Amino acid sequence: MSEAYERERQNNARLEELSAKVSSLRGVTVDIYDNARAQDVIDHTSDTFSSMSTQLKGSAGRLGRMAASGNKVAILKLSGILVGTFIVLYYILKWIF
Image 1 (cartoon, rainbow, N blue to C red):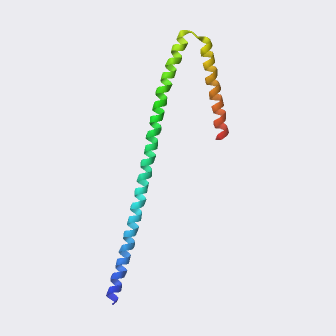
Image 2: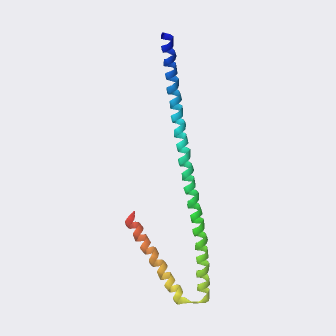
Image 3: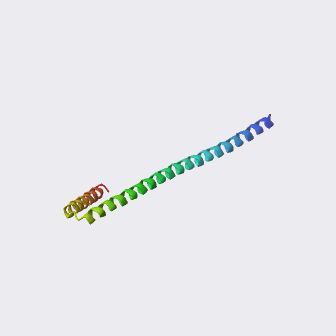
């Protein structure tokens, strides 16, 4: 009878070891999933900034063509709008953070 109890105790100990390993593996799996999601966010952000850079280059090119054409009133208006926008954004971000 004591041999059966000893085997049961060993089985329980091994079952607890296996349970600990499975929990550890689950934790690693969750960490890998979180890391993969974070990497996807980083890739998406990189694509967004790349797209923004391309659009900014196009806008700068159009602004250069407009400046070359000599339309000084349009350049002055556009410059005022840009400066005003940056000032408003600065104060909004300063207020938020």
